[in-house]
Length: 136
Picture 1 (cartoon, rainbow, N blue to C red):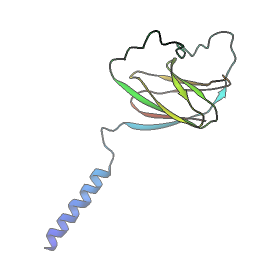
Picture 2 (picture 1 turned 90 degrees about the horizontal axis):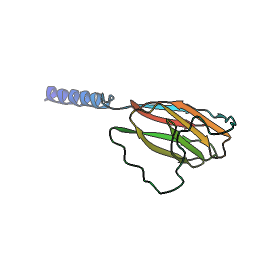
Picture 3 (picture 1 turned 60 degrees about the vertical axis):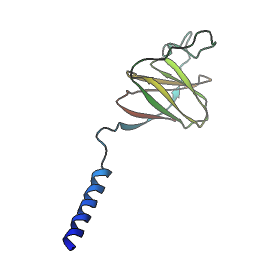
């Protein structure tokens, strides 16, 4: 009886250790703290923005095909912030808020700018892991 109890306890301990280890198929979670810099005033269009927020409902955007991933943003400032991924507008974050955007599988850069254009944030990333950008 003692041997049977010992075997059961050993099996439970082994299972606890085996299931508490990280999953080989889980995405790597990365938190990137991005500090703001003063936005440079330019004459003309911002070269980091390829397409700004839409201003009409005239032509709906087609749903993208293929793999996609989500990128999370945490806004630790009192500013409203426009989010761009690879130069394309993805949304606006509330002051002291958070949000998630869906992007194509091959994104490389994020660019954020305050609605008033006084502060900006730049970072890089990819879909190989789960990224959370903390904007400060």
